[in-house]
Structures are given as structure tokens and as C-alpha cells.
Amino acid sequence: MDSFVISNVKNIRGESISVRVSGGKITHIGDIVTHQNEEIDGKGKMIIPGLVDMQVHLRDFKQAYKETVKTGTQAASRGGFTSIACMPNTQPCLDNLETLNDLKEKVSEEGYCKVFPIAAMTKDIQGETLVDYKTYKDAGVLAITDDGRGVQKDEVMREVFEEAKKYSLGLMQHCEVEAISKGASLHEGKKSKELGLVGQSGLAESEMVKRDIDLLREIGGHYHVLHMSAKESVEHVRKAKKEGLNVTCEVTPHHLLLCDEDIPNEDTHFKMNPPLRSREDMLCLNEALLDGTIDMITTDHAPHTPEEKAQGLDDAPFGIIGLETAFPLIYTYYVKNEKMSFEKLIDLMCIKPVEIFKVANGQLRVGDDADLCLVDIEQSKVVDAKEFYSKCENTPFDGDDLYGWPVLTICNGKITYKDSNYDF
Ligand SMILES: [Zn+2]
Image 1 (cartoon, rainbow, N blue to C red):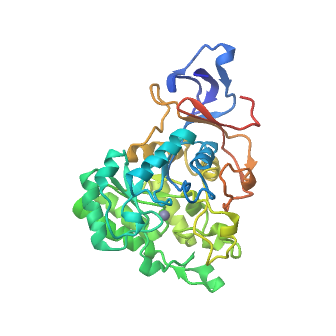
Image 2 (tube, helix red, strand yellow; image 1 turned 60 degrees about the vertical axis):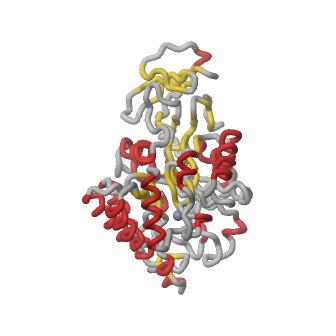
């Protein structure tokens, strides 16, 4: 089906519209006369731009048992995403042209959405030796990170800033001073005390945010704080933005909706890095989300197998998955609960990431790639991790009753996900 019309859908302002898709592009929005055989009847559904997620761990290669390009992008499509960024801490890692090309090839062969590779800041994410960033530019890389770790050495980070500026590469930092965090599995607070475990303070994150903002002020470029979690970090970013520095940041649904007090017993589905912090931190992130300090929502989708997650709080790997729950979570707890407008949600999950990182495509406009999604805001459904398209089930939101489920996702004019309970 190269040309079709999605009719009877409502846009986020509640207006009834029809959208024509032809040759992979949106060719018309508005009143369209259709012939029955070219019509997708979207009655009662909302139409939104395809979602964009700037932080996804696709695994694959030596970690294909956790996730592959195929299953990760299928999970993205089921979650309403049409563009995602692939973090470089794959094995082997994305610090060279060959692996970047291998990833590109996999995406073109088995991908269900657009994938934008983010390359490593330093060789093998060790924080020691820089990679030749010119190779990245030639491979179309837009930003770099050592995500999973932050660059510890000040002099190395200074060099990263200088080289990245030369090639206009965005810097995405996983902010963690390891001398402070000591790899602790929980936030230092109520829960760590209760369990008698060593915790990591929010300063582990914010001290790196502070150092990097000082470098940004001196050297310039674009600096982005990944999965911001601590109230001290929020303050540094807020001040830097007031100064007019080119700093941006993101937050995950789990850091917005959960805090350390919510961790049941020693449930490793609540273990991620940065950890769930205090209630005060969580409230501060919520305030920053609504006042515009936080630019976007990302999932930090990090698949781990049940066996890996069964190792107990100290030994289980950090990370949870998020692609298939992010939109319903934010829709339900913010838009439906009237804390946020639908426009703001689209800004956070579509428009801002596109503006900031120059990925595709974030809006519904004639002439753009047909990347879009229909969501059902009337029918609630309980999260069932067993139904995930992801290879893994490590989510703390299993069992939540949510609204706003994507029911049809289209990327480049092709259907990439269809909920079989709906008659499209
Ligand atoms: Zn990270």
C-alpha cells in the first residue's frame, strides 16, 4: 500500500482530520475524499507525530541475547516511536567506522524505525583516549557519549569538548563521578539505610554536570545531560540556561514517576543508573519538566534478561526497559491527570529532540516523511511485560493500568506496528 488515507482521526487540538500518505511522505492534511480501498479508518483515535527517543540501548552483536536491532526497533514501533538513537556501549562498541557501518546495515535490513547512531567519546568507553572524530562526521554521527560511564578525567573531557566543537558533534554525558558513586546500586537515602546498603548521593551526578558546564562556558559547543536525576543537577542546568549556554537535558519516565521509597523489598526491576533518588529529587524533576528546564523525555531502554536481573540488588546489572511503556505512562500521569497539555507532551517526545539533535522528524507536516502514530486515549490497558516485543521484561511498571496506547505506527509511510485488537 504505497498510497492511503488515514481518516477520521483527531489531532492533539481535538480537530477531526484526514491525512494522505503517498510515496513515504505526508502529501495532504485536511478534508480528503477517499475510495474505500485506500482508507484506514482511525475513528476515535488521536494522531500524533512518530515519537523520538534519544537514548536507547539496542544491544545486538555479542549481546543479541538481550536485544537485537530487530527486536529493539519492533519494541520502539509498538511504543509509537519512529526515530531512536542507539547508544554506543554495544559490544563491540561504536567507536569505529566498521561497527558503525555494521549497525547501519542491520538497521537497513531488519529495522522497524529510523536509528541514529551515537558514537563513543573515547576508545572503548574507557575515558582515556579520544577517537578520531572526523571518521564519525563522515559516517553521519550527530552526537557522542560514553554512556554507561561518564568521562572521569578533567583533562580528557577538556580534549573531548575541543575536538567535538571542531566537528560540531553534540556531547551527551552520563554524569557520574565514580569516586563519589562507588558504583552503589541505590541512592543514598531512606531505602539504602533501610536495607543497610551503601548508597550514592546526588552529588555523584551533579559534580560532573558542574564540571562540564564550566568547560562548556570556556570552550563552547553543545552539551546534553543524559537521564538527569538529582535536584543539584537541575539547579546547575537551570543556571547555565539563564546564562545562555547551549546546554540541554533529558529525564526518563521512571525518574519522574518513582523515587527510592517506592522500591519494593530488593526488587531489581527498580535498579538503574542513575538510581531512583529521593522524593524531593523526584518532585524537583517534575517542576523542571513543567518549567522548561528539562528539554525532553527519553527512555534509557536497557534490556537485561530475567537471569541477570535475578542476581540480587548488588549484583544485578543496572537498567530497565522503557520503549513500550513511555508514552502511555506520560500520557496517563501527566496529560490525562491534567498536569500537562498534549502539546507539551509532543514537544518533549517529538519536537525538542528533533530540534536539538537534528534527527527526523517530529511533526505532522505536508512534505515530511510519513512518521506517525495513532493512539487510543479512551481504552485503558494493563501493562503486561509478557506481551512486550522487546526480548526482555525488566520493567517496574508491570501491572500499571494506563491510557494512551499506540495502536498503529507508521514509519516512512509503512506500517511498522498494528495492534491486532483493532480493525484497521
Ligand atoms: Zn547512562
